[in-house]
Every structure is written in structure tokens, then in C-alpha cells.
Length: 299
Image 1 (cartoon, rainbow, N blue to C red):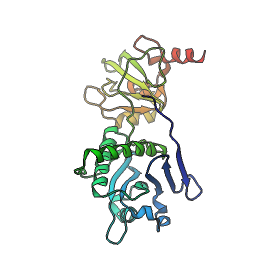
Image 2 (cartoon, rainbow, N blue to C red):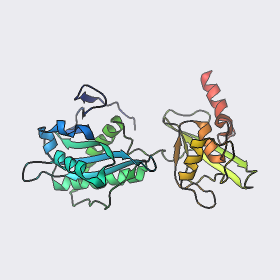
Image 3 (cartoon, one colour):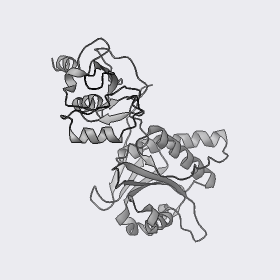
């Protein structure tokens, strides 16, 4: 199916890109806000932030530098307070001191009730866990509630738009690192990621190193299931050594997760545990190196 362009309106509420942002999308009843933790007080008195909605608290772990998110819902209370009141409570909670900004989804017509926000919270949590980009801090699995098939269809359309907005606001929370792998050829369509391979016998461990990698528009993703070198060389870049130590790798050297790198050489260095030229090491199934493919593209 052909992907169509979208018209998105970003309003810089404080006149700066680092301040509060209100986001709307053509032909969508939803409204999104990106609010720095330090700017919550400026949002007092906004009617749409007194409504029901779903919110995301984004932060980074001090121990691992891993991106973290907490996903929650907020209903309208008897005193008329909704989302903003809930965010303020989280700001005062010492157990949630990691978050630095919130992203909020509500509607322009105040159409969310308890059933809708429960369903959305459940679906957003599931999508975030499946994408595996962020550590999801929710302690309990939210319930999806009981909704009709008509309402489910309506909310799934809302989710599709929310995913676009979330990426536009700088959080690729719902986007998996790669799509389902496809065999690569020299001529790649613009919608297909290039699948690359590396295979060599290790002199350090004596094992066969066999890895696969996808080139995406973000960089190079070493794929889950790759067999990597378990012993570091003296020449390994410090950052790559740290990534190898934190990665999920079993005792046989099998990678248990997809990992993104910005350059082919760093992706290759991660696999072999030492310095290497990724343009030469990564090759298609037909044995064509990444360097050859890029050179052909320049001609």
C-alpha cells in the first residue's frame, strides 16, 4: 500500500524548540503535547489538559544511559482536573524522578472515557514493549477493558495517528529497529532495508563468527541470532567494548536482541570485538561488499 504524506502542525508554545509543543494533524480529532518537566506549571488553565487522556513520561537511566518511559492514563476527577493534575502528582513522586519530559494525547472534543483510555494505555504499552526501543517502567500490565468492535476500529485509527505524532516529537517509541528481514540484492527498492552478512573464523576463540546486519535509514542493525566473538581485542574502541558488555549475549556468543549502530564499522567491530572496516566486511548474500554497493550508487 502506498504511504501518503501527512500534514502536521507543530506550535511552539514558548517560541523555542526546547519548550512546550502542541501538535495536531490534519483530519484528526486528537491533540498531543510535549511538555518539559520544568514547564508543567505553565500549562495550568488549559482546558484540554484537564480532560481524560494517555501520557508518557520519558527519561534516561543514570546507571545505563538507557531510554526509559512510563505509560499511564488519566481520567477526569470530581474537581474537574485530569491529565495535568496527574502529571503534577508524578513530578512530586520521588520514585519517578527520572523523567524529564511528558508527551500527552487527548482529543479536541473531549471524547475519551474510562474504557477508551484503558484500551489505549494497554495498546501503547504493548507496542512499546514489542518495539524494544525503551525500557518500559510500568509495574503492572494495564487492562484493555471491554470495547465494541466499532470502538476498537476507531481507537486503532487514533493509535496509527499517535504513532506518527510520537515519532515527529522525537521519540521512536513504537518503531521496531527493523522490519521482517528480506534477502538483499544489488538493486534495492527504496522501501526495503539492505540485508548484509559477515562470516569469518576467529583466531581468538576458534569459533565461527557469523552475523547478519540490516542497513536502515537510522544506521546499521546487528540482528538477533548473530554469533559474535566473545573475546575482545586490544584494538576494540572503548564505546564498542561497553556496548558488548551491556548487550544480551548467551554463553555461546549468540546475540539475543537487535542492536543499532550509526556506522558499518562500529557494527562490525561489535561483532568481532576489535577494529575493522565495516565497508569491506559487510557483504550481501552474493558476496558484494557494502563499499562496492555504495560506489555503484555514486556512479
